[in-house]
Length: 115
Length: 114
Image (cartoon, rainbow over all chains, first blue to last red):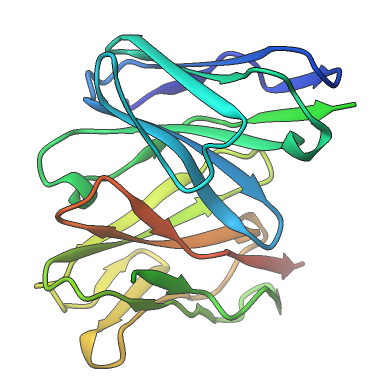
C-alpha cells in the first residue's frame, strides 16, 4: 500500500519559533511536495522536490524552506513562525516520468496553530 | 494559464439521492491529466480517479461515475445513491505533462444527511 507519513498531526507553536514538519514516503517516489490548505483557497503548493537535494519553489514559498537529504524524507521548515502560517499542511509524493500525469499521494496532514 | 474551478462550495443531499459534483478546467496543453480526490474529516486526501486527455470514456466504479467532456472542459463526478460515508470535501485537480505542478480546485463539501 502507498504510504505517506507526516510526523505530527497537531502542533501548537509560538510566534517566532522555528518549526519542522517531517514527511516520509515508502514508495520510492522521486517527487515530493508540500501543500498548504486553507478554507476557500484549496491546496496551494509551497515547495516541491524532484530529486534528493533538489527543490523548487511553488506558488507560496515565502516564509518557508525545505530540505531533502534522503529520497524518502522531505521536511518543511518555518524559520520564524507567524500567525498567518496557521493552517493545514499536506505532504505528497509521486513517481517521476510523465510528471503531472502521475498520481500524487497524500499524507494525513499536519494541523499547525501559531499563537 | 491553468485553472480548475469547482463552483459548488457546498452541497447537501439526503441519503440515497444522486449527486453530481462539477469540475471545469482550463489548460493550453494538449496532453494533461485530471484527478479527483476525497478528503474525509480525518484530513487525508484519498485518490479516486485519474484520467488523461486522450481518454474521454466515462468511467464507473461502483456508485461512483465520472463524465469527461473535452468540448466543455469538464470532468464531473456523480455519486449514485449517496451514503452518509460519502460526506467529505472533494477536490478536482489538473496535472500537465510538462510540469511537476498539479492545480487543485477549491473543493466541494458534500454533506449527506441520514
